[in-house]
Structures are given as C-alpha cells and as structure tokens.
Image (cartoon, rainbow, N blue to C red; front, side, top):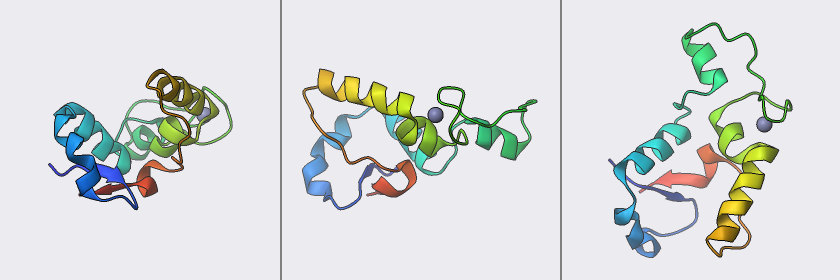
Length: 103
Ligand SMILES: [Zn+2]
C-alpha cells in the first residue's frame, strides 16, 4: 500500500511514514477515498436503516469522512487537544480528500 502525506510536502520529509502502523495508513487511505463507514457512505451503499445522515455531533452538515475527521467542530476540538498533547501548534487541515496525497 502506498503512503499518504499532506499535499505540498515531499516524501523526503516523511521517512517516519514507515513507522506508521499499516492499519492507520489503511484507515487514512479509506478516509481519503470516502470509504470509512460514515452515515453518508453507509446510506450510499444501502447499508442499515439510516434515516439521518446529518452529523450527530454538531448537526451542521452531512456526516461524510471529510466532515467526521476534519471539518466538524467536535473533530477540530479533539484534533487541537491531540496536537497540543503532542506539542504541535497550528494545523492547516481543511480536507481529508484534498490535503492528503498518495506517495
Ligand atoms: Zn459535525
């Protein structure tokens, strides 16, 4: 499987990518391809009886992979907490499908 990095960066800066567990890379790739089991994806596939595809955390948008992982206010709050815990400040994540590219 290929790795996924942020657009505009080079693979040279991401040698640590080999240290990322395969399951994390697989999830990232599936998120980029809109293949994680979000309400929108499940509804599109006709799986389950999903009557509401609006995000249950913020009730502001459709629950797609991009919204669940990056755009939702709840997701952004969690991401800021995790980044702060890792000692990283600021992020430019705007979209799972656009900010990540395969290398
Ligand atoms: Zn939301």
